[in-house]
Image (cartoon, rainbow, N blue to C red; front, side, top):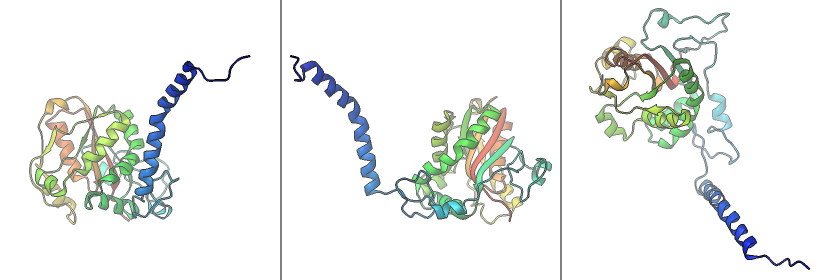
Length: 268
């Protein structure tokens, strides 16, 4: 009669099988432990989230998100208030105000998205880079396909501002987006060489004057002939990115420059 007693070979096979699975189980245990000690919170209001929710926002904050969808200006992505039969350029794009080739933003700079960006940018909540960058993946991939993007460049901060804040919010977003869409991030080429006052509360003309000559290229050869995705957190009048795009194209010889932001201001 055959014996049911495990042999050395079968025992070894079982050990190898469980040893192979152990890292997966260990990672799951650690993940559950972290969620127990530090439960996930809503990116908008900071309240605890149910563990089975995949979205970074609670239902209340999710309802206040004003995500941008068509119809919008085919160049700058400005959403139109009403349905239109055919896409057309907005007034700014007809006037040739913008230097970029195309721009897209995920949502309007209001409600939960505005609160989230404020907590991220001014409150030091760098962990919010993850959910915010996740929102950029779909439009980032779309822009990369349309314009053959070679690298992502975050809008730089002046060294003084970087010391004050401790991080560049655009760089944190760019790192995560670049990893997700498999595009390299160039942190070194574009520099902010002149200190500028905050743009908040300034008119378009004042904003343009405030950032004029504030940027320069350290390594123009890295952008020459390339498709660049310029990344920032918020697009307001577009004067900051305009100056960046101007330097990238005029001084660096970039082939195309597209702009991607988490949010943009939209007139009521």
